[in-house]
Image (cartoon, rainbow, N blue to C red; front, side, top):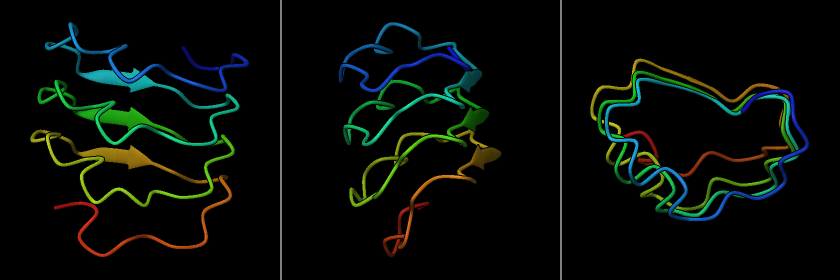
Length: 88
């Protein structure tokens, strides 16, 4: 899904992809992410969110079910703050 013009992802878009290990969402136009967008992706290892227009990651639950995550790339967004306990 990388290198597109995606500006929104519906909250249940990835719900059936329980075995997904790599998700490339970089180089899009994402502004925000629903706090449950990654809820069923417990096998995800790599998540690329870099080069979007993300302003905030305010939900403390955004990455909570990413039990096997090793890499989350967030560079080149519009982030100004990372909430406490975002990654655990």
